[in-house]
Length: 188
Image 1 (cartoon, helix red, strand yellow):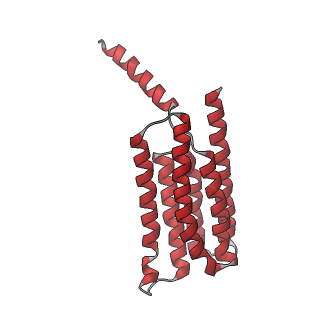
Image 2 (cartoon, helix red, strand yellow):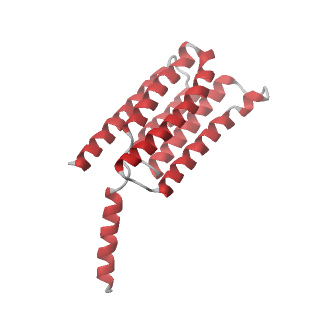
Image 3 (cartoon, one colour):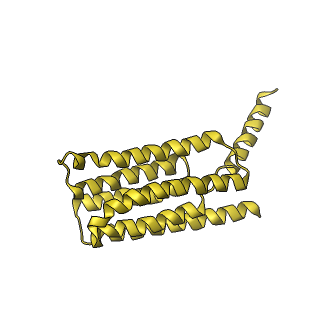
């Protein structure tokens, strides 16, 4: 086969793969927008409930996200085991990162406030890297989390957690609505 035909075929393969690129699952974005809006307000208004909330909401939200993602993929007829494994590994490593943030507090050497900031750093990196490697819509919430980490660490203004949570939740709502619009465009 001549080289120009191979290039044409490669172009077609890339175009098809790009059009099959997964659109974000709207329900997952909305779920995490709600969890983050509530969970990020807790350090400002009910700090002693923040840890238990995140323990339960983080695990339950992760499991719900997994279920919503697999259901959406099945509905769309997508069977990409490699992509599913990448998503699972990414978010399992994120969960491990969150658990490691607790280590300084377990041995009595950690400050709860500083450890909470570290959670924001880990979350920002996980979301931003998901935006780079999995689904572009996670990038902006991740960048907002990284900016919030810097603000919380350097300045600690009043209600910084709540304001950060609302901004990040807003970016997740936008991502969810954008994913739904993209899905509708593909169906038309």
